[in-house]
Length: 148
Image 1 (tube, rainbow, N blue to C red):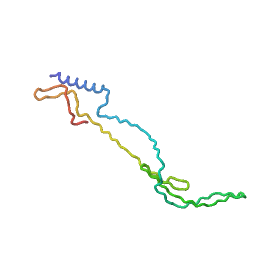
Image 2: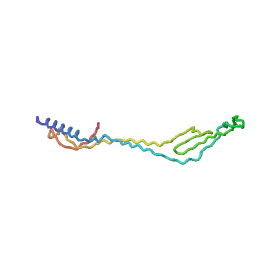
Image 3: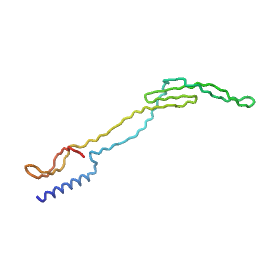
Image 4: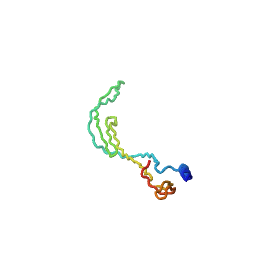
């Protein structure tokens, strides 16, 4: 009966050695592969959704007179605001020298959550105490109730 603990220690050491020398990752660990892909989206110019008068602006245009005197002539220019809208963006522009006032981009975002499945069933070496026969050592199928 003194040889039984030594057999159990040898089996445990062999199991741990083979497990560490296997070279594979545990089944609970998952590897996530990330691929970055950049798309260029070309869109046709949409029709204006809304055009409204914003204000009048005065533009001074230089005028050259015969005697070499430079004068300027004022011109009143109406300034409009234009809105463009698609399902992907909303833009507002305005001005004599056109300026972008507002740009809203509506991006579609997809979130992927990866859940790893732990192995519940396993095949392995077992040692224990049996009720009718006492101590035993063997190979058995097991179901893991708690996993840590």
